[in-house]
Image (cartoon, rainbow, N blue to C red; front, side, top):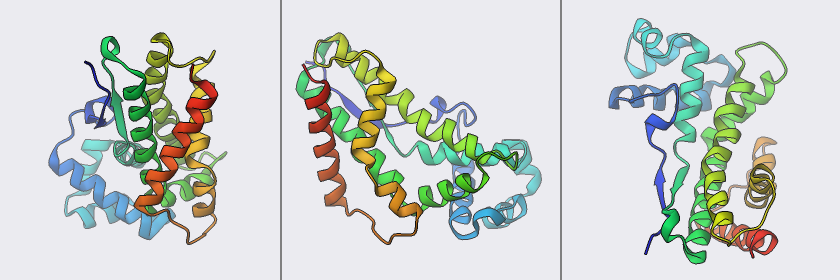
Length: 216
């Protein structure tokens, strides 16, 4: 019987990252840490110093600052597990389990200090030409999540377990059910951060509500 397995997104699924080396991953981790601590003041020089590499290497790997920021956002997004499905063996239970696991992973990443820092900077730059981080986060964050889950939802519809007209609308519903007001509260400075038990519980509840709305 086929099962729905949740695996970390492979680096090759993220356009700018390609075949990421261990060293490049270390550099992106350093950039993420700096974004949390420095926010808007992040520079290529600071990343090079923190990662103990040259600025020339950063430019070679990622291009300009926007390229580094894009890769950094994609690296953070890669921490959200991507459901892999066996369409031929898909069952209602395996579909539910996969959606629920994706919700857990999504909420865990979005509630993290790193994601909060990225989103705060992106909001600051939204609607301006400065760095374009707002567009980078939108394309490689929220939209990338949709690109990962929508094929699973469509497979569930093809198997007769889900009923919806538009997969994007269905994904938006699930996203809202999972995230609720957590992201907004975190962005506004609320100290609230869901515990691991709360993340699991919220994902389970969101999936149950989603299946009530769209399940056959």
